[in-house]
Image (cartoon, rainbow over the protein chains, first blue to last red):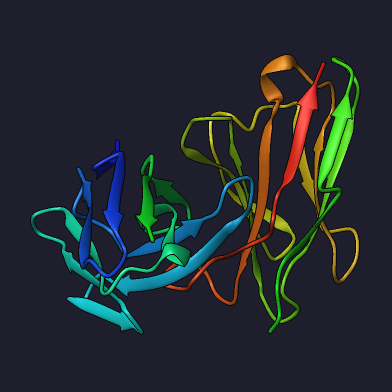
Length: 111
Length: 114
């Protein structure tokens, strides 16, 4: 059974820092991995999707990498801003479109 | 930019009552999903729907739950007889194709069962 884990559970950094969020999954047989942002009490906003054949994807200040064989993904946020404060979720798709989520990393960026 | 919409944003109901949660997926999308998130817990998959039938469902999606696409735009989740433990945020999502495609999520419906 696929399990997704995110470390750390919470992170607080000063504005301007570069940071890395980690996601690990137990079954490497995935089709893709998606990173989402969730603001308190709100829905999920898709940030990046990495196909299983890809190693990384970039969007603006965000860069996500995938090492399928070791069951790991990282989300790198460059030059963090207070507006980046949110919970970041990773989710894997095994084959059917069913996403299995981690518990998230709650990020606070202090001005 | 097209987005998934959900109504209502909040719903309070009494235990044992039926509720219908509504979603309007992005118009050219073909795959539809429901997820839920109990407060403080992970987002959990409930069901996926394609071509007017259920593609996959989780063990949570028992006989109390049903989904329907009553017309060309709406996608609904019905809970027949709500329980206290059904209290959660329910998210609808859609994707243009199935796996390997980005899923776009709606803002959610917060359901509170008293």
